[in-house]
Image (cartoon, helix red, strand yellow):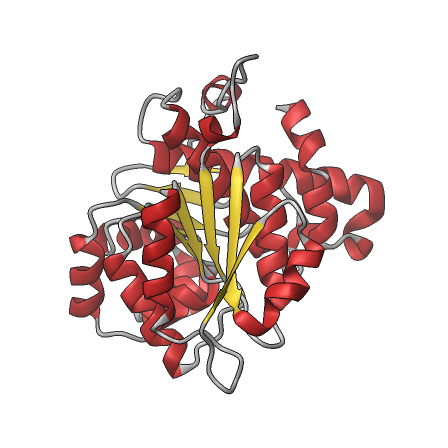
Length: 302
């Protein structure tokens, strides 16, 4: 299995110059959270901020807006229409489109903690169909897409004019591919390649030695250990990739396929941060928040 070299990974980091400003490093829009799962949105936003993104906007059900704002004071927040279950409604997409027209988001991260409520299912499908923004798709957004028929998903994803990064764990990948987790684990490389091709998106198949594929090649990630097997670490990865990608796109300082590079660099830094947290706290005690707090050390090590 091939790995990106440290030199290639370093080249994907957006350099800082003394005359830069926050607009140089992009604006991440995160659509996440539902009643009972606000923490996923907070972890995602904190990771996007730690990535170096210039701005982060966290869009959540309106009833959660005040709470999440207090936990992520550096982020902008946007309260969206919700149903009686505390889940996003499809009319919230209009609010996102209006905000994008004003703010010109660089990357959308969608999925962490959203739920699979029927209203949220329509929200996700409409957002991906109508928001002209590169997207990192994770968690419940992946499960919502997996619940659609194959031709419909392929048409939706193929029609998008902006690229996507998918970040499934093996169970989510199995649902997306209409197969079993056992089959995915039996040939992870084939699964990553197939999902990338079928859904016209870069795929990061999570797990030990996570795999990144653009449908033509597959690279493995060499960092990360058992301490990352905790709830919330995937939300951190989603925010990290979105933030790294936003910087690449907004600054125009990275050459090559930025979606693939953002996924590969995000996996590497996420693993390094997990390794640092595990060394400090051990695999049992570390949490997803410890991974966020270790991202500075990960950047330094790279």
